[in-house]
Amino acid sequence: MGGFVRLRQYENSLCKGRLGSSLFCAPMMQPFCEQECSELEPLKLAMLLFEDFELLDVTGPLEILGRLPELFTITLIGCELKPISSVQGVSIMPSTPMLEESRVDLLMVPGGRGTRTLMNDEALIDWLMPTGLRRRLSPLCTGAYLLAKAHLLDGYRATTNKRALEWAQEVAPNVIFEPRARWVKDRDRWTSSGVAAEIDMTLTLVAHLAGESQAQEVASVIEYKWDDDPDHDPFAKDDSRKGLQSSPAIVTAFRSRLKPNHQEYEVIAEDLERLARTQPGLRFFKTYQA
Amino acid sequence: MGGFVRLRQYENSLCKGRLGSSLFCAPMMQPFCEQECSELEPLKLAMLLFEDFELLDVTGPLEILGRLPELFTITLIGCELKPISSVQGVSIMPSTPMLEESRVDLLMVPGGRGTRTLMNDEALIDWLMPTGLRRRLSPLCTGAYLLAKAHLLDGYRATTNKRALEWAQEVAPNVIFEPRARWVKDRDRWTSSGVAAEIDMTLTLVAHLAGESQAQEVASVIEYKWDDDPDHDPFAKDDSRKGLQSSPAIVTAFRSRLKPNHQEYEVIAEDLERLARTQPGLRFFKTYQA
Image 1 (cartoon, one colour):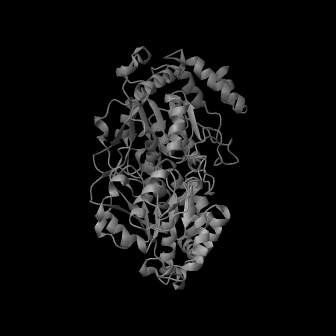
Image 2: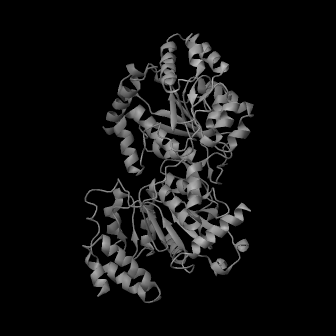
Image 3: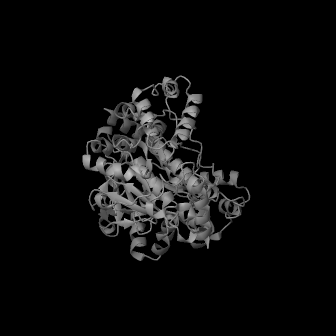
């Protein structure tokens, strides 16, 4: 009974998404909005594990999403089925080897020291590309680098740990990194700032998918003082606007994204307008709109 | 160089403790304050793992303490050396079997559904008693039940998850549970409320041991909005004073603790006075003082 109510709420919330289900839902769940609630399955959440991942990047979201088995099933994906160690030396067992995992509704990629090594791991980047392109993505902290490397954030607004922001912009020039944000939701891509920001972002993700009251309930059970304002970011540097610069690569990426699917135009245009209002100094909006 | 400076700060902070090192330091570290800084070893932190532990109870503190290898070494203690699953289905590998672990400077006991079963695990309770009695303890969330069962919180003020408070008071009548607190530090026992409160408490523990700036630095790196006020507790119920009642058992426990070490009298008296100021309706203070 409780599950039915929750799923109904969940469906309604999903149906409100401007982009509909095409970028989000796995094939077996489409057409999402036309199904009966009772036929709906939980979303398949996959968390990527790798050596030297950041512990809380993985466990913060899982503490929350693992409390909602009606909404999510959790898969921990590793290169091999052996314990994988965090930066802090805590080893977590993956449940599935990377290459065997194909159906993913929501892919989460944590940050951590290990991302630097993985930037050169072609097998992983190749796996991310087909996995990520059709799915809702949530890179956490420095996990954004890996998705940027797989071109899954090209032309998207994103954020990452404030202490790695300059490096991020350097290695991922096609991504619009926002230097002052706890997290950024740009269509189906959610990115978050430093480690603890994931917890706020994940609760917001739950609110987005399943309703505000569901997220409030989880926050209350775990006694977490949820801050749902993505702009309340005391960790941004004072010169936080420095990182946002006009980039020909971003313009090119935006233009290229218009070609395969003209329906995206409206969404991108809205995003640009919104950005232009808050960041009037950015020339690329004008270039784009001309 | 950095390590030396940090350890100097750490030593000074420890020496300030009213109770001195007898309840805190492991034998090999005593007399703590007379040693040269260069000889100091990191504190040995042991986190207890058991089936159905609460994920963030374990990983929140470890995310923080694992970033300070000069101050802490981390041991994950399990009954056996096999992956141990959290309530959320995330399996962590212990590093040491329970019965082989003897030297512990700081023991942390997480909460979670599994604590209910472990309340009847005599081997665990027996192990906790000699381990815990000589060490600084930090039960997290419902982990307090296990330490209460081993009589390690008798006569201490403590707190736990707000949704389990009534049950806690029932099964641990010798513990003074505070219904409105993010965490409680009573001499060498630290207890925290619901899952996320551990993160605030652990940062405060770091500040206590290694200085405020060290804790602020970690909070900044992980971008956590640390609230260091243990009384700022929005999750306490409105009838939060209801749980605190006079209890003859508490009075007895307090009295018995005076016998072995008269020096403790002053500390207990101070605690009672402070409690009496905030909770004037509690009769047991008068009984005690009479």
